[in-house]
Image 1 (cartoon, rainbow, N blue to C red):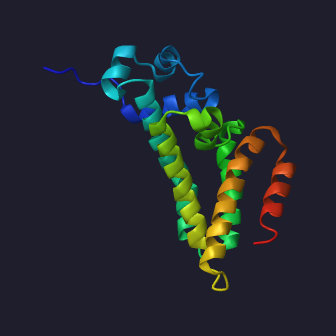
Image 2 (image 1 turned 90 degrees about the vertical axis):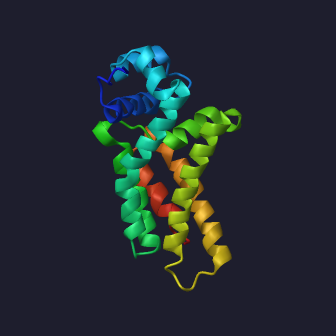
Length: 187
């Protein structure tokens, strides 16, 4: 008979996500995961396969966590104003617990770069594209914008969001607000 799990998978993944968010993928070891998650290496491998599997589950959990602000953007009918609010909401989200963490997805993209594991990079790119599509959806609310303009501006805003992430880890709130305001000047 198989043993039942003595832990809640959601809770241990949340802890793992926090560790990856703080230390990065490469700098997080299985030993660190054991300690943070409160489960042994055997349980990690039995439930998630390996560190890679824990990380992929952490990205899924991160998507659920950030859903509060992405859902707000999905419901927005304010076009560019709604996207700008998403940028401000992201800053609040990334500074949860008074810790400047940035975005787990963007942090990992910056860490791993083009040589990162293809499965992880695909997952990160999918996340980026989901946010970019939300930007495009909101830009379409401006009937004066044509499709090529919408796509260019959605790309621009997606990349601006990636730039906001590392900046949010070191710059002052005023500097970040200036960045956001300048980003939206010509949209």
